[in-house]
Image (cartoon, rainbow, N blue to C red):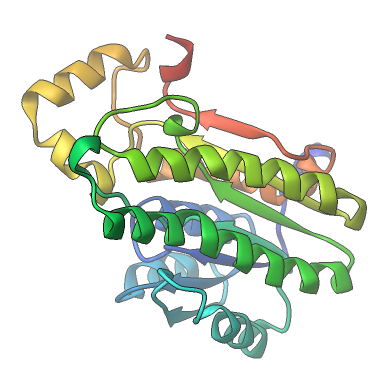
Length: 252
């Protein structure tokens, strides 16, 4: 039956940035589809744990700062110690810094690029080695509308998210032969901490909403179905593609 292809029973999903926002929404969806979840975050993981356990699945987590690659080995070792394998990797953790490009600092550039691009590459590399030994797996990168557009006042974020589509493509090209699917999701304007300042600005919020055909900001749960699809057998012949979940923003 076709619906069976979307089931994730017996799978283990490693989700970065799972503490809240998009990561929490994705982790919840994966658990509801049958996956056990290993969450990576910078703080209290209780909300994610509660959501996963409520779905009847197992949960474990680790606190890690992904501005460097130092935590990667510990993340992998902890996930394997708890679950014995990794079938799905969701590279959701990301940060943003806002300033006019003429005044943007090197530190803000490096911090964003490290989390949003460099750590994603090396975590994916490490997990892919495991997946090759397991016979395959699924890697899902969380891109952005700014993977396609320039935006304003977020130069390092735009550069990192544009680069992430390129990373998604090259890893798909190299790893498809190992039965590893590498794809991405590009969220639109979502209700997250990263957009709080925009949502609290009545002028900017109004300008954004009038351009979204769906007429609303996206919720973290809006990504869950797409994430389950890309993590499941239903997407086995999809490699290197980025799906926009944006309320129609890019079509406008």
